[in-house]
Amino acid sequence: GENVEQHPSTLSVQEGDSAVIKCTYSDSASNYFPWYKQELGKRPQLIIDIRSNVGEKKDQRIAVTLNKTAKHFSLHITETQPEDSAVYFCAASQLAGGFKTIFGAGTRLFVKA
Amino acid sequence: DGGITQSPKYLFRKEGQNVTLSCEQNLNHDAMYWYRQDPGQGLRLIYYSQIVNDFQKGDIAEGYSVSREKKESFPLTVTSAQKNPTAFYLCASSTSSGGMDQPQHFGDGTRLSIL
Image (cartoon, rainbow over the protein chains, first blue to last red):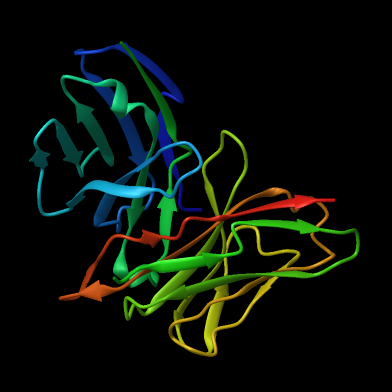
């Protein structure tokens, strides 16, 4: 069935360093790839998304890259800050699939001050 | 202020009891979803609905039921058949615009525990 694999499950970086989280998806029809950030006990919130007609998108310290051939997409956070500490989820969806979105298992990011 | 409202924030269930979690949205979104999140884990889809009076089972629908009588509302009932209901439940909604997927908007969640 449809699947999204996310790595690593836990990531610890020093403040100011970069963090990279990687996801692969199985359904080649997927065309929308959002990333969500969830702080402890709170709701997941969208931080960036990318569509299949674009290879890279950047928003200040956050960037996402997409390789459709490899069915692989990644989240890059530069100049990490303690407030970046949270769980990050990648997801893949396609409208023709009836609004259904498949989420990765999440990456817990710790940014050490 | 548009958004998704889940209630209650905390809920306790007794043995053999059914409980209903509320989810209301005023975003005029067509699709609504229920997810279960266990500690340290990802989001698992319970049910989703693309349109009023229609809903589909997700990956872990057993022991749960839903209804979608109004566009704004998508309540989830955790039945006594769900033997391990303790979890954080998240409701979400989304729409399509210009024929493209849009991100899901989440509520603040309901934390359900067994007494």
